[in-house]
Length: 562
Image (cartoon, rainbow, N blue to C red):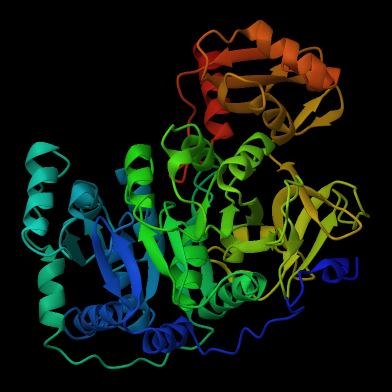
């Protein structure tokens, strides 16, 4: 396809970036902190830390890791934290000490945590007190964990706020279970002692592994994608090149509702916005929409990232439209398909387009993104970013032409090194020519815009016709009275598979007949759901992505028990 997308790049966006312009993420961190010392960097629940604060606190943490815990370059440190001020301090501190960060979802069950700790070989973990009981169970298993550092929500807040919030969470809300871990260290004490120690700078290169970012938990055993410093530096620079025309250094305020342990938020918010001197407004509990909106109301936000379900939830809250969107420049959706009904309403309410992007954990994550000057929803995930090649292959491994569906493949400096200690799975996703196979069915038009049709595993085959759940979900989501929708394929003797739709109602009077009548008007026959089921809620991942696999498993389980 000869990089046809380059002809349609926004003005000023380069065809290539230089991922070797910085030695590592640590190099970016140090230069950024020096440049923006006194500017606010992270905010959470009324407390703000500037770039100098983050620099000094992360240095104290790094010094403790080196001198007190004797952790060496390449050792793995797990972070089991939601969006709190402790996260950037721990993450940057670990990287400065030359460690590899293992991000952990705080909502993991003990078996999930045990698998990740065993697989990664992490020797230390930093965990919020609310989730320490899960770590205790992991300790009883055969893992390499030696050091547990426990932090409380208010550890970085001034008194008496720190005491009050910790007391409230433990004794009023009962969010902190009583857990006895005699060997555990206090995060506050770690910082205090670290300030008395001398940090010894570590030579970190761009080939060193910065993160073991686990993926695949919804489709099988989670695998650790090895993301090097060069991978992340490249993706940060690609984002910087793409959004340079609309963002100002030292002036941006981004709402960070997606968890920082997720690759989308980690790169787009924590690393990219940090690099340009912006402020991350950390939202600890994105499911509490009234609290999210209350926090957003305190700022003239200029940017926000999220998944479709977050944007949809905000739009349906009566107070959201009352916020000040006069400075909003960038609304970026990823992680799952952005639906047209949501994008259209977002633009109507905020005056800013909801740009859809596409990426994978294995690509740090960004592969494609729509131009920032987009004026309307176009149903695509945009153009490949600088220094990125994409191609489409059919089942025989042959490249397909424009507007034809095929498996999307990627090359670029942001593509992972491979899966940690898993050469077999690594070999499965890379072709002999070095293409990373994404597992997503896509098409590319004559201008280079990529349209994601479906996850390969989610595609429904109805009487030989390919049916893409995203397309049907997008149509049903436009029906008045629908709050959320998920579509899967279910077995059928006559056609192999048929379409089933799960719908969460916004209007209690909505009926199956209403849905089917609407579908008959807007979908061709084989795409119309044969079954419609109303649900109280839909299963979602930690970032709010609807899990179709969980719905399929539920059907399988019911069939087996029938």
